Length: 276
Image (cartoon, rainbow, N blue to C red; front, side):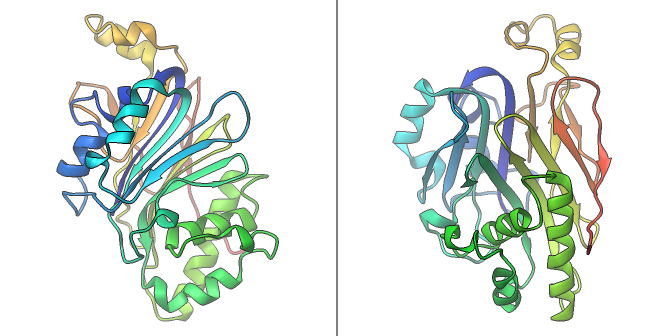
Protein backbone atom coordinates (compact mmCIF):
# COMPACT_ATOMS: atom_id res chain seq x y z
CA UNK A 1 0.00 0.00 0.00
CA UNK A 2 1.06 3.66 0.30
CA UNK A 3 1.15 6.64 2.67
CA UNK A 4 -0.09 10.14 1.92
CA UNK A 5 -0.93 13.54 3.39
CA UNK A 6 -3.08 16.46 2.32
CA UNK A 7 -2.71 19.93 3.86
CA UNK A 8 -4.80 23.09 3.49
CA UNK A 9 -4.28 26.35 5.36
CA UNK A 10 -1.55 28.88 6.10
CA UNK A 11 1.13 28.63 3.37
CA UNK A 12 3.94 26.32 4.49
CA UNK A 13 7.17 25.14 2.86
CA UNK A 14 7.01 21.54 1.72
CA UNK A 15 9.75 20.56 4.16
CA UNK A 16 7.50 21.49 7.10
CA UNK A 17 5.37 18.48 6.21
CA UNK A 18 7.75 16.15 4.38
CA UNK A 19 10.88 16.34 6.55
CA UNK A 20 10.48 18.18 9.84
CA UNK A 21 7.79 16.25 11.79
CA UNK A 22 8.93 13.43 14.07
CA UNK A 23 7.14 10.85 11.91
CA UNK A 24 7.25 12.82 8.65
CA UNK A 25 6.25 11.38 5.31
CA UNK A 26 9.94 10.84 4.53
CA UNK A 27 10.30 8.91 7.78
CA UNK A 28 7.21 6.89 6.84
CA UNK A 29 8.82 5.98 3.52
CA UNK A 30 11.30 3.95 5.57
CA UNK A 31 9.47 3.26 8.83
CA UNK A 32 5.69 3.20 8.30
CA UNK A 33 3.84 1.90 11.35
CA UNK A 34 0.19 1.45 10.41
CA UNK A 35 0.25 -0.08 6.93
CA UNK A 36 1.07 -3.58 5.68
CA UNK A 37 4.44 -2.34 4.36
CA UNK A 38 7.11 -0.82 6.55
CA UNK A 39 8.89 0.58 3.50
CA UNK A 40 7.23 2.70 0.82
CA UNK A 41 9.95 3.09 -1.78
CA UNK A 42 8.26 2.62 -5.16
CA UNK A 43 8.29 6.29 -6.08
CA UNK A 44 6.76 9.46 -4.68
CA UNK A 45 4.99 12.62 -5.69
CA UNK A 46 4.11 16.09 -4.45
CA UNK A 47 1.39 18.35 -5.81
CA UNK A 48 0.72 21.94 -4.80
CA UNK A 49 -1.32 24.96 -5.83
CA UNK A 50 0.14 28.40 -6.50
CA UNK A 51 -1.43 31.62 -7.75
CA UNK A 52 -3.43 30.05 -10.58
CA UNK A 53 -5.91 27.19 -10.76
CA UNK A 54 -3.55 24.55 -12.18
CA UNK A 55 -1.51 22.61 -9.62
CA UNK A 56 2.18 21.83 -10.02
CA UNK A 57 3.65 18.34 -9.68
CA UNK A 58 7.04 16.93 -8.77
CA UNK A 59 7.26 13.14 -8.97
CA UNK A 60 9.96 10.51 -9.19
CA UNK A 61 10.47 6.75 -9.29
CA UNK A 62 13.29 6.68 -6.74
CA UNK A 63 12.51 6.24 -3.04
CA UNK A 64 11.53 9.58 -1.52
CA UNK A 65 14.27 9.31 1.10
CA UNK A 66 16.90 9.17 -1.64
CA UNK A 67 15.83 12.08 -3.85
CA UNK A 68 18.09 15.06 -3.21
CA UNK A 69 16.11 17.30 -5.56
CA UNK A 70 12.99 16.75 -3.45
CA UNK A 71 14.91 17.86 -0.38
CA UNK A 72 16.16 20.97 -2.20
CA UNK A 73 12.82 22.15 -3.56
CA UNK A 74 11.10 21.39 -0.27
CA UNK A 75 13.09 24.17 1.38
CA UNK A 76 11.96 26.78 -1.15
CA UNK A 77 8.48 25.81 -2.41
CA UNK A 78 5.56 26.76 -0.19
CA UNK A 79 1.83 26.51 -0.70
CA UNK A 80 -1.54 26.80 1.02
CA UNK A 81 -2.64 23.42 -0.37
CA UNK A 82 -0.28 20.46 -0.60
CA UNK A 83 -0.66 16.80 -1.56
CA UNK A 84 2.21 14.38 -0.92
CA UNK A 85 2.38 10.63 -1.53
CA UNK A 86 4.89 7.80 -1.09
CA UNK A 87 4.18 4.64 -3.02
CA UNK A 88 4.28 0.92 -2.32
CA UNK A 89 3.09 -0.65 -5.55
CA UNK A 90 0.26 -3.18 -5.49
CA UNK A 91 1.26 -4.56 -8.88
CA UNK A 92 1.56 -1.87 -11.53
CA UNK A 93 5.09 -0.97 -12.69
CA UNK A 94 7.30 1.52 -10.90
CA UNK A 95 7.27 4.33 -13.45
CA UNK A 96 6.69 8.08 -13.46
CA UNK A 97 3.18 7.85 -14.91
CA UNK A 98 2.07 5.55 -12.08
CA UNK A 99 3.23 7.85 -9.27
CA UNK A 100 0.66 9.87 -7.34
CA UNK A 101 -0.75 12.51 -7.17
CA UNK A 102 -2.60 12.43 -10.49
CA UNK A 103 -3.71 15.66 -12.13
CA UNK A 104 -6.43 16.64 -14.58
CA UNK A 105 -7.02 20.33 -15.10
CA UNK A 106 -7.36 21.92 -11.67
CA UNK A 107 -7.96 18.57 -9.94
CA UNK A 108 -5.49 16.52 -7.88
CA UNK A 109 -6.12 12.93 -6.78
CA UNK A 110 -4.20 10.41 -4.68
CA UNK A 111 -5.07 7.07 -3.18
CA UNK A 112 -3.96 4.37 -0.78
CA UNK A 113 -5.41 0.92 -1.31
CA UNK A 114 -6.25 -1.15 -4.34
CA UNK A 115 -8.80 -2.51 -6.76
CA UNK A 116 -8.47 -6.24 -6.12
CA UNK A 117 -7.35 -8.37 -9.08
CA UNK A 118 -7.18 -5.23 -11.20
CA UNK A 119 -5.74 -7.10 -14.17
CA UNK A 120 -8.93 -9.15 -14.50
CA UNK A 121 -11.16 -6.09 -14.82
CA UNK A 122 -8.79 -3.46 -16.20
CA UNK A 123 -10.20 -3.63 -19.72
CA UNK A 124 -13.83 -3.25 -18.63
CA UNK A 125 -12.99 -0.40 -16.27
CA UNK A 126 -10.82 1.59 -18.65
CA UNK A 127 -13.32 1.26 -21.49
CA UNK A 128 -15.92 2.90 -19.24
CA UNK A 129 -13.86 6.11 -19.04
CA UNK A 130 -15.50 8.92 -21.02
CA UNK A 131 -14.08 9.22 -24.56
CA UNK A 132 -13.07 12.86 -24.04
CA UNK A 133 -11.13 11.90 -20.88
CA UNK A 134 -9.50 8.68 -22.08
CA UNK A 135 -6.63 10.39 -23.99
CA UNK A 136 -5.41 11.91 -20.73
CA UNK A 137 -4.78 8.53 -19.07
CA UNK A 138 -1.00 8.12 -19.12
CA UNK A 139 -0.19 5.23 -16.79
CA UNK A 140 -1.34 1.70 -16.02
CA UNK A 141 -2.35 1.85 -12.36
CA UNK A 142 -5.68 1.13 -10.72
CA UNK A 143 -5.50 4.54 -9.03
CA UNK A 144 -5.40 6.52 -12.25
CA UNK A 145 -8.22 4.42 -13.69
CA UNK A 146 -10.21 5.09 -10.51
CA UNK A 147 -9.57 8.84 -10.87
CA UNK A 148 -10.76 9.00 -14.46
CA UNK A 149 -13.81 6.91 -13.64
CA UNK A 150 -14.67 9.40 -10.89
CA UNK A 151 -14.28 12.22 -13.42
CA UNK A 152 -16.50 10.27 -15.82
CA UNK A 153 -19.17 9.87 -13.13
CA UNK A 154 -19.33 13.56 -12.22
CA UNK A 155 -16.45 14.34 -9.86
CA UNK A 156 -16.11 17.91 -11.15
CA UNK A 157 -19.75 18.75 -10.43
CA UNK A 158 -20.20 16.84 -7.16
CA UNK A 159 -17.02 15.20 -5.80
CA UNK A 160 -18.66 12.89 -3.20
CA UNK A 161 -21.27 11.69 -5.68
CA UNK A 162 -18.64 11.18 -8.39
CA UNK A 163 -16.53 9.01 -6.07
CA UNK A 164 -19.55 7.07 -4.78
CA UNK A 165 -20.71 6.33 -8.32
CA UNK A 166 -17.20 5.31 -9.42
CA UNK A 167 -16.83 2.91 -6.48
CA UNK A 168 -20.30 1.49 -7.12
CA UNK A 169 -19.38 0.84 -10.74
CA UNK A 170 -16.02 -0.72 -9.84
CA UNK A 171 -17.67 -3.05 -7.33
CA UNK A 172 -20.32 -4.05 -9.86
CA UNK A 173 -17.74 -4.88 -12.55
CA UNK A 174 -15.49 -6.73 -10.10
CA UNK A 175 -18.26 -8.85 -8.63
CA UNK A 176 -19.38 -9.88 -12.11
CA UNK A 177 -15.82 -11.15 -12.51
CA UNK A 178 -16.04 -13.15 -9.27
CA UNK A 179 -14.10 -10.69 -7.08
CA UNK A 180 -15.84 -10.59 -3.70
CA UNK A 181 -14.09 -7.65 -1.99
CA UNK A 182 -13.07 -5.30 -4.79
CA UNK A 183 -12.15 -1.98 -3.14
CA UNK A 184 -9.95 -0.84 -0.27
CA UNK A 185 -9.29 2.87 -0.28
CA UNK A 186 -8.38 6.11 1.33
CA UNK A 187 -8.63 8.91 -1.22
CA UNK A 188 -7.89 12.63 -1.28
CA UNK A 189 -9.11 14.90 -4.07
CA UNK A 190 -8.93 18.67 -4.47
CA UNK A 191 -9.97 21.41 -6.88
CA UNK A 192 -7.57 23.93 -5.35
CA UNK A 193 -10.18 25.33 -2.97
CA UNK A 194 -11.43 22.36 -0.97
CA UNK A 195 -10.01 18.95 -0.09
CA UNK A 196 -12.28 15.92 0.17
CA UNK A 197 -11.04 12.82 2.01
CA UNK A 198 -12.68 9.37 1.76
CA UNK A 199 -12.21 6.11 3.67
CA UNK A 200 -13.96 2.92 2.56
CA UNK A 201 -13.56 -0.80 1.98
CA UNK A 202 -15.84 -3.38 0.38
CA UNK A 203 -14.77 -5.84 3.08
CA UNK A 204 -15.05 -3.46 6.02
CA UNK A 205 -11.32 -3.00 6.69
CA UNK A 206 -10.27 0.26 5.01
CA UNK A 207 -6.75 1.70 5.16
CA UNK A 208 -6.03 4.00 8.09
CA UNK A 209 -6.86 7.70 7.79
CA UNK A 210 -6.65 10.54 10.30
CA UNK A 211 -7.49 14.24 10.33
CA UNK A 212 -5.88 16.88 12.50
CA UNK A 213 -7.62 18.56 15.41
CA UNK A 214 -8.67 22.19 14.92
CA UNK A 215 -5.80 24.63 15.37
CA UNK A 216 -7.82 26.68 17.88
CA UNK A 217 -8.17 23.59 20.07
CA UNK A 218 -4.49 22.69 19.73
CA UNK A 219 -3.48 26.20 20.80
CA UNK A 220 -5.50 25.78 23.98
CA UNK A 221 -4.19 22.28 24.68
CA UNK A 222 -0.55 23.04 23.86
CA UNK A 223 0.24 26.74 24.44
CA UNK A 224 3.92 25.80 24.73
CA UNK A 225 4.15 25.00 20.99
CA UNK A 226 4.76 28.22 19.00
CA UNK A 227 4.03 26.63 15.62
CA UNK A 228 0.31 26.55 16.41
CA UNK A 229 0.30 30.32 16.95
CA UNK A 230 1.51 30.87 13.39
CA UNK A 231 -1.22 28.75 11.78
CA UNK A 232 -4.58 30.15 10.78
CA UNK A 233 -7.71 28.59 12.23
CA UNK A 234 -8.65 26.95 8.92
CA UNK A 235 -5.36 25.02 8.69
CA UNK A 236 -6.06 21.27 8.66
CA UNK A 237 -4.38 18.07 7.55
CA UNK A 238 -5.45 14.55 6.56
CA UNK A 239 -2.87 11.76 6.78
CA UNK A 240 -2.50 8.02 6.39
CA UNK A 241 -0.48 8.01 9.60
CA UNK A 242 -0.12 10.70 12.27
CA UNK A 243 3.03 12.76 11.82
CA UNK A 244 3.80 12.56 15.53
CA UNK A 245 2.48 11.45 18.89
CA UNK A 246 1.27 14.77 20.28
CA UNK A 247 -1.70 14.12 22.56
CA UNK A 248 -5.04 15.15 21.09
CA UNK A 249 -3.65 16.13 17.70
CA UNK A 250 -5.15 13.38 15.52
CA UNK A 251 -8.58 11.84 15.03
CA UNK A 252 -9.42 8.70 13.08
CA UNK A 253 -11.76 9.15 10.14
CA UNK A 254 -14.48 6.50 10.59
CA UNK A 255 -14.79 3.69 8.06
CA UNK A 256 -17.26 4.31 5.22
CA UNK A 257 -17.17 8.08 5.65
CA UNK A 258 -15.84 11.23 4.03
CA UNK A 259 -15.23 14.82 5.02
CA UNK A 260 -14.20 18.20 3.65
CA UNK A 261 -11.08 19.90 5.00
CA UNK A 262 -12.23 23.43 5.85
CA UNK A 263 -12.96 25.93 8.61
CA UNK A 264 -15.95 25.20 10.81
CA UNK A 265 -17.31 22.20 12.66
CA UNK A 266 -16.17 18.76 11.56
CA UNK A 267 -18.85 17.49 9.22
CA UNK A 268 -18.24 13.83 8.45
CA UNK A 269 -20.76 12.08 6.23
CA UNK A 270 -21.58 8.49 5.33
CA UNK A 271 -19.91 7.14 2.19
CA UNK A 272 -22.16 4.78 0.24
CA UNK A 273 -21.27 3.38 -3.22
CA UNK A 274 -23.98 4.04 -5.79
CA UNK A 275 -25.03 2.36 -9.01
CA UNK A 276 -27.30 5.07 -10.43
